[in-house]
Length: 99
Image 1 (cartoon, helix red, strand yellow):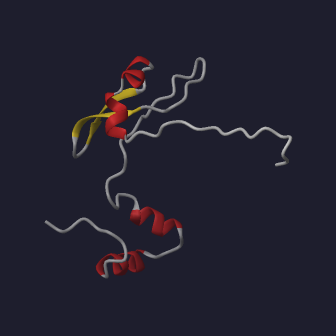
Image 2 (spheres, rainbow, N blue to C red; image 1 turned 180 degrees about the horizontal axis):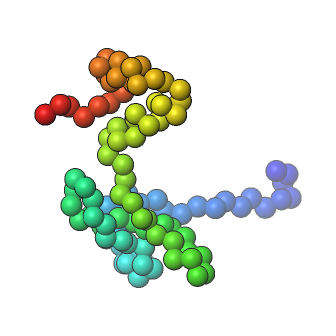
């Protein structure tokens, strides 16, 4: 950038989610959504940060649990069921502890 060119910067304040969910701006803009979570019960989350006319975009599913999709991802990467089980047994892939 030369001396004659003005410098422009895009910036804004970043908030932690907990602080953002308490903010009046988020409430006024409809950016909060209540969602049933399989472990945490009913939670309030930030909705998608943008809106398009006529689309009604919103969060439809809760965040995945720790390791919830590990098996599927490993299989998609070409690992066999035996390899996936071995990786879980060795602690390479997270697996829910047996009850």
